[in-house]
Each structure stands twice: as structure tokens, then as C-alpha cells.
Length: 147
Image (cartoon, rainbow, N blue to C red; front, side):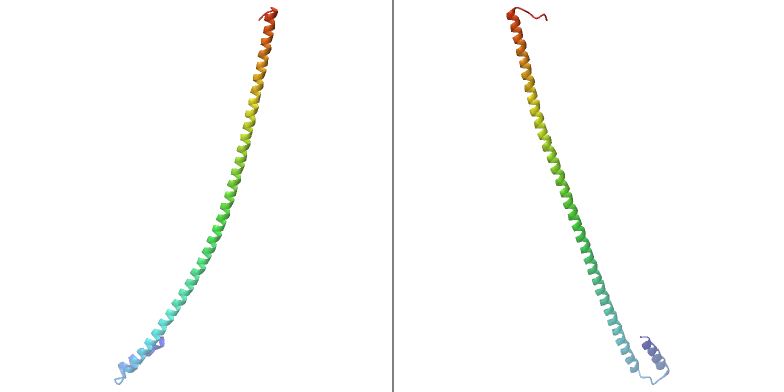
């Protein structure tokens, strides 16, 4: 392009100095400018397309990386969720077992208390019966206890 500008400058000077200058030489030079402009435009367009392709490839690579990272994060989340569910299930089973043992212990204590109260009532009845028998013996023998 600089050579064309230099040639244009030379021809312009020649046109100013030479009265017999042929203007078609400048037209030919202008056609060369036009061709050179199209070449520069085509090269710029090719460069832009190459940059677009590189950017698209970079975007695809970034998307693939993001997908990979997201998939890894989701896998880790699923494992964490499963671990939490297992821990919660184990804890619930432990609580259910503890509650069942407490219920059985309560039932045993209730049975024990029931048996103990029956024995106490039985002992009280035996004591009362013995006292009544003793009192009847005393009444029938005529002896009265001093109290």
C-alpha cells in the first residue's frame, strides 16, 4: 500500500508539471488501490473469521470444563447427600432401638411394681389375718391385750 501511495504522489507531481500527462495512468493506479483495498479487506475478514473460530473453540473448551466441574460437584453433592441420609437412617434406627429398650424396661418395671404391690397386699392381708386370728383367740380365751 505504501508503494502505491508513493507512486500516486509521483504521478500527482508529474501531472502538475507535465501538460501532456495521461490521466488514465492515475486511473490505472486507482484500480490498483481498489484491488489492494479488497485484498486488505479480505485478509482482515479472514483474520476476523480465524479469531471468531478461536473464540468459539475457547468457549467450547470453557463450556466443557464448566460441565466437567459441575458434574464433579453434583457427584460430590450426591455422595454427601447419601452419606447424610445413611447417617440420619443410622441415627433413627439407634433412637428406635433405644426407645424400644426403654419401652421394654418400662413394661418390666410395671410388671415388677405390679408383682411387688400384689406381694405387699398379700403380706398385709396375711398380717391382718394373723392379727384377726390372734384377736379371736384372745377374745375366745378371755384375755385382752393390754394395749
